[in-house]
Amino acid sequence: MSSRRKFLTDCGVLAGSAGFSYLALGRHDWAEITKKSKKSSGLTLRFKPYELHLKHVFTLASGSRSTTPVMLTELEFDNIVGYGEASMPPYLGENYETATSFLSKVDLTRFESPFLMEDILAYVDKLVPGNYAAKASVDIALHDLVGKLMKQPWYKIWGLNPDRTPNTSFTIGIDKPEVVKAKVREAAPYRILKVKLGQGNDKEMIEAVRSETDKPICVDINQGWTDRKMALEMSYWLKDQGVVFIEQPMSKTSSEDTAWLTQNSPLPIIADEAFQTISDFSKVQGVYSGINIKLMKCGGLRSAYIMIKMARALGMKVMIGCMTETSCAVTAAAQLSPLVDWADLDGNLLIDNDIFTGVTINDGKIILPDRPGIGIIKNKT
Ligand code: MG
Image 1 (cartoon, protein in one colour):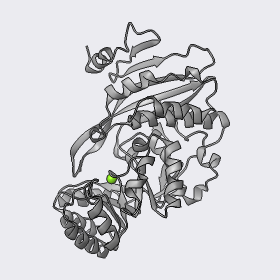
Image 2 (cartoon, helix red, strand yellow):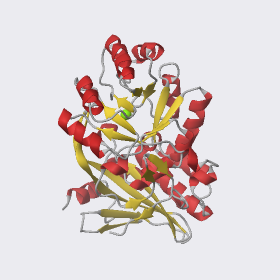
Image 3 (cartoon, helix red, strand yellow):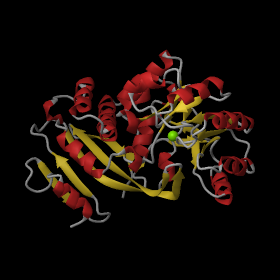
Image 4 (cartoon, helix red, strand yellow):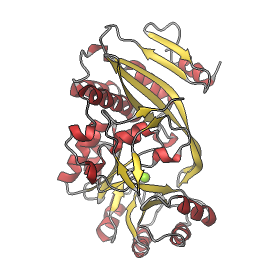
């Protein structure tokens, strides 16, 4: 028995559970579980595991990895299918088992119409605490479905100007100088680079990048700095190196030190690990200059849209980011990008087995597809 089939059996959602069917697709050891609607015209949710393969081993302050587990979702109504995705890098605590358990509980047959988005997503949110990536996979699929039913892309439904999309940064992981230089050359099409720091070789990393390019850089420390005076000195040094902001310099629990750094730093300090969803605003206001919103942290587009509006009301900067994801979740997030200061939407560019086509990058700038829903099409496999 495959490990995937075993956990599905362990979760009790395979043979013997009324309402579920299981199909092993074989070629890539995929599995699929379908929760069928009791009503022929109702909403049908499907989900299946998929493993993303990274082009390069990805190293940040918390460790290295070469794959990311995702759960793909489909939400069908009136023969129209909306696509969604949960990306579950290990440090977030979600995995195939938790997503299977959560999605097995989601019963959308109780809703007669997908247009009841507030009711549906409030129900999904309250079902079980946490599980934000799994919740995002339903939220994204619902947005895609409803946009397709309305025959409009979400940026148009929200009234956003597609010309206002920012440049996306391209991420350079922590590595030896020669590898960093090669990655910088590979990132030639991008106008801003996001450099991962926080493992003790920060200056060496930045000097390697600067030996290749004078493009603007943002840096992500991933909580790697521990001393606030050193952090402040580094922020001045980084500003001199053409860095535009610093993401999550110290531990997400170091509010006092981070607030001091934000007050004194010449560069904006952005919360990532310290900020997950709406309830975290009270923790970051006055501590950070801005927030990094990710659909997998906050539960999807509905929360992300509200959080952008809240951040603006509080005078905070906004960045939209992603995990390693297919073009499904990345293109969904891109629909919101005309509203943000900075975008880090390169997760689909870091994998070599994307199964969707969606957002594209032209001379570094995000180009929103003029297609309904979240704007993706499924690649032929
Ligand atoms: Mg980050």
